[in-house]
Image (cartoon, rainbow, N blue to C red; front, side, top):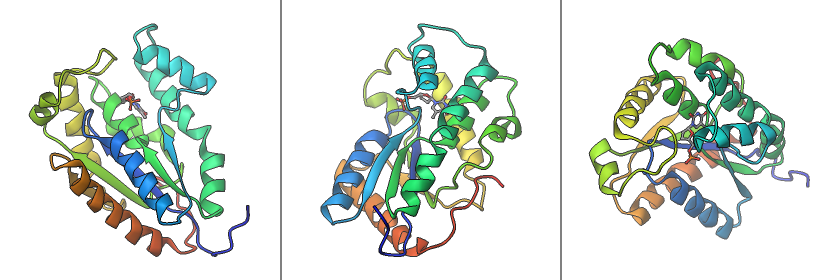
Length: 215
Ligand code: 2DT
């Protein structure tokens, strides 16, 4: 379908530590935008449906072990394999709501000992740059109150604290449009905030070219 509006879609990313409510908020945002007549679609990373995604899934479920650099590169490859689709949809005027992106990629790997932010960013340099990154902020103790972590890899308090530290580093980058949201508030208030930031950005993108992340 061609894009009659002359306006491209916006690339909206939701990030945050586990249990912050990203997936719930992505769905609510999608519903709200579609109800108002916008063209919007959801993506999530890792995308466990591809061949690479299946390798990642089995690693996360602890059914396989992968060397740490190797799995980092697989997560990045799992984004690159969706880049043509992402660009196509944005050009068609479809707004994309993305549940985790390269920021999770960098935050989770660089939370492991011996990894630098610089090394971790490299494989994602050049993927489409988000127009907006909503960071759902939740303290580790509030996250714990939402119930036990699951059984997947990375789902423990110590590691999540390291991850949060790495996200905080990434948020210092002023070339990116980060908005920090208080994820301890109720679902509907948080949704309204997310929706209003998103709609503002959707207006602003116009026909601006899609930029490259970290380049
Ligand atoms: P969920 O499917 O519950 O979001 O968990 N991760 C994610 C990485 O380590 N690197 C990445 O690039 C991405 C996108 C975060 C997915 C888990 O995988 C981690 C939690």
